[in-house]
Structure formats: C-alpha cells, structure tokens
Image 1: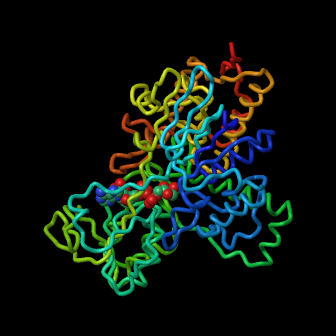
Image 2: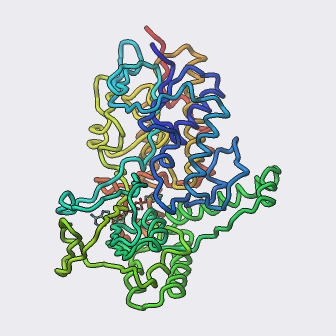
Image 3: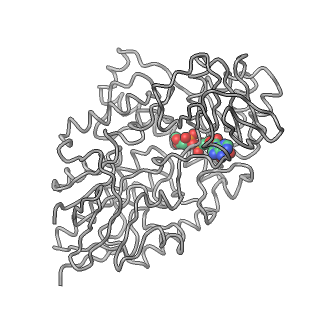
Length: 491
Ligand code: NA7
C-alpha cells in the first residue's frame, strides 16, 4: 500500500483534511490536485471583482485565523494567498501532488484499500477522502449556436486575463453570485455591456468596509479575533441555515425581501429596469447575493439589461426570442457550476465494495450519505462535501465538522487494528429519514420557489443540504455513535 490516506483536492477542504490528519497523528497521506496550484475555487476563479460572499472572519480555519484581511469580505486573491500560507506554514507542499487529475477510484475488497487512478498512475491507500468541493466544474449553458460564436468566450470560473474588454461590446449571461461581482467591475471598461438575465437574484446590501492596518492589528488580539469570528458566523448563519432551513419559524425572508426591495428602489432609477430586477420567488429559494454596486450598474448609459430569453448565439452576437440581434465582441458566461449532476457528484467515478458505482447508487437510491460523510457499501471512503452534509454556512465549518467525524472513525480503526470502516445501512437510513423529516420548515415548503430555478435541487427534486444549524452539526460530529459503523480487522 502506497499511503494510509489519499485526499482528492487541494482546495480548502483538502488542506483542512490534511491538517486534521496531521493533528491526529496520521502523516502518511497524499493530496492529489488537478490544478497547478492550491486553493481550489480561489485558484480557478480569478474574474474581476471576485470576493468571498460571507465575512472573511468566518471564512478561515478556527485554528489559523488571518489578521491580514484587507476587507470584511476579502477579495479572491487574498483567499488564494491564505491557502498558500496554510500550505507553507504547515509544511504540506511535499505531500501535495499538483497537476494530477483523479480519473477514478476502485475499492479492493480483498486488501481493504482504494486503488486510485491518478492521471493514469495507480496509487493505493487504505482511506480515500474526497475533498473536491461542490462548485468546481464550470457549467456551460445549453444555448444553441454557442460554439459558432466568432468572438472570445470566457467563463467566469476560467477568466482569460489576456482578453482586453476595453471599449468592446461585451455580453454577460448569468446573474448569480459571479455575475453580480463581475458585472460592476467590467462595466467601466466595456464600451457597451449587455446583461442577459434569466432569473433575477435577490441582492442584499454588503456590510463591507476596508480594514485599515490599525484595525487589523486588533485582530491579532484574541478577544477581538473571537468577536470578529462570531460576527462572521452570525451573518453566515442568518444568510443561509436560518433563512432557508427555519423559514417556517423565523421571518428572515420577509425582512430580507423588504431590505432588498428598498435597496433596489434606492439604487435603480428607471422603474422598468427595477421591475425586471425584482425577483418573484421567496428569498432563500436560491442563493441570494450581496452587493452595493451591482444594481446601480444598470443606471449607466453603456449598460443594458436584457430579459427576453436567448434564442441562439450567432457568429457575431446573441439573438433573443423577440427577434432582436445583439451584436457583441466578447461573451462572458457567468453560468455557474455543475452541482448535483452525475458528472460532479461524485467528482470522479467511485467504485465501492463489489464494484458498485457511487453515482449510479445515488441515482437509484437518491442522494444520501450518513452525516454527509459516508455511504454504505463504500468502505474507507469519506466525503467532506457529501449529500446532507453542508448546511450552507461557512464552508470552513463544514470542513472542520466533517474532519472531526472522519478522524473519530480513523482513530477507532487504529485503536482496534481495523482495516475496514463502513457505515451500517440502518444508520444511514435513519439519518436520511431524519433529514427528510426536517424539510418541513424549509423555505422550499413554506415559500414560493416556483420561478427560482435553484441549483440546490437535484434531478429527483431533493435538496441535499443539511437542514440543521451549525451548532447542531458540530455537536453531531462529536456525539454520533461510532457503533453506526462496522470496524473490521483482516480475517
Ligand atoms: P449560479 O448562482 O448558478 O448562477 C448562474 C447564472 O447563470 C444564473 O443567473 C443562471 O440563470 C444563469 N444561466 C445558467 N444557464 C443559463 C442559460 N442557459 N441561459 C441563461 N442564463 C443561464 O452560479 P454563480 O457562479 O453565479 O454562483 C455560484 C455560487 O458561487 C454562489 O451561489 C456562491 O455560493 C458562490 P437561472 O438563475 O438559472 O435562471
């Protein structure tokens, strides 16, 4: 066996997994990363205006707080720097193999290990930890003629820094979080900017300020760092878990909608444009976003909002269903990511015990995973982002919570000399049932999500996010019953 563990992905999940394994005394692991650098989403996404969309104080490891964030919502480059800092400080580089795409993994029932196809080379390990994130595979829109466009096409998740937008006719398709960030940034440079919106997004004010150096030095003092972190957690908790999962109990969406509408009235002058930007679904049905500059961009004379459906992309532009042709030079796709699609969940073909394939198993049985971490029939396989694992708050809480769970399993296996850890089907079913029962309070039941087109839904119409608060999620990771797993030693 080559290693005790293989971690797939060197984004924050993979880095966090590695750091937690080290802390648990498991040093023999290898991190495999497709990209040429670490940082995951922050390595790949470099479009103008990219920034984190929950406060940075919450978007960091609890044990490695960064006192150098330049803003409450740090720009993407600082997140990438922070990832590199963690790798350097904890000496992870020698255990990360970059430019190595995992093409598949197969469990060997005889030897209780995973055979991982790493860019064509087989590497074996007892444990396989998937840390591939959710938003890592860019989604190309299924629009007719897109391949015929003669100009430059750029997906926000793979920004082309050689493309010069100065004075050009630019179109952006998509008004999700990426669109909201990139649109105000490029409006200045582009000669004419046309934004193609299919579904408006609830846009909330961003409580963002620059953090001057004296204020940053306060973040080196523990009580201030803790207070900032609690502030960040509170915002993140309201922004998703409370808003979405406790919609039937707390009127956050009503309040948020009122704030968002007030911002729209205040920032957009033309009432017709305002009407187009106003969503008609309940806040929380799809991920809302925050910006102080997005809406006002539509006051600019060189920016147009187009809501007629796109019929086709031609060699020289976009034609909408009302028969209008929009000539353009550069087409920006802010069209998001594959989420619960079979190509992304799992991110690579995973064949468990007896060769069962995970994507196929989920297709038949619906997305499910015990505590969002493990699936029956897939021994020694653990996910950071599995179905019903992420409650929507800071991604770092997910990483730390899931690693607490995983490390508890690995520690018991060490203590008992076990080589095979597998969640019991009845424990998984119990967890799945509980998750489904909890959905009664979610916005998806209480609100009107008809027109939202949310990426939260999978092909079965399920929303495999964990309907719990972060406190409960963390509590479960330390209290779940280890007897929900079987631990087996070699015969
Ligand atoms: P999102 O939030 O999935 O947004 C994608 C946008 O692209 C959204 O407005 C889509 O409209 C639009 N889209 C996608 N396909 C098409 C087609 N075919 N035609 C027209 N419009 C289309 O991705 P982001 O990258 O913005 O954000 C992802 C996450 O990153 C975000 O939630 C944060 O957590 C950070 P739709 O709404 O589907 O009508």
